[in-house]
Length: 114
Image 1 (spheres, rainbow, N blue to C red):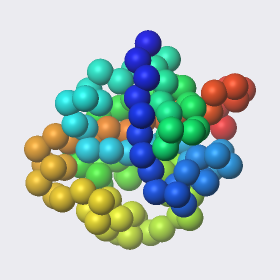
Image 2 (image 1 turned 120 degrees about the vertical axis):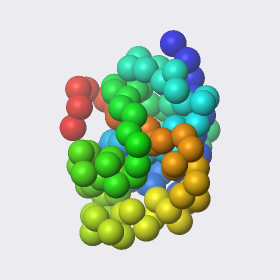
Image 3 (image 1 turned 90 degrees about the vertical axis):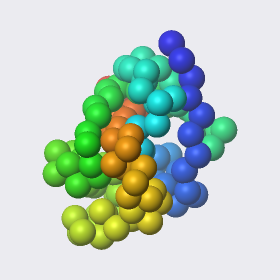
Image 4 (image 1 turned 45 degrees about the vertical axis):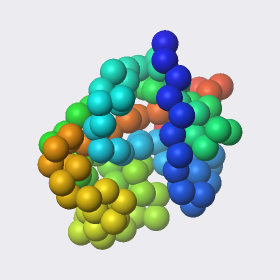
């Protein structure tokens, strides 16, 4: 079991704590390629979670077509706004070079998935 330390914006940390956000999406940098169910994530050095699933995609658009947007962005932006958010966080060349990873998780101590 590995432990990953991920930083998220404060607004997303609040959604994680409340149970509304259950999928973290990132560019699939090499250090994330080995993530698997059972590994742990510590968000912002304070919120522990357990990975329940990991899926790789080619693009953010593909993630948003196949994963529930509400579990990624609980404020439920439109599809196009969600794509723009990702592209505001990551340059398009990184998405093209590394692909994208969707990480499903639950908080440590939480009963089975929401």
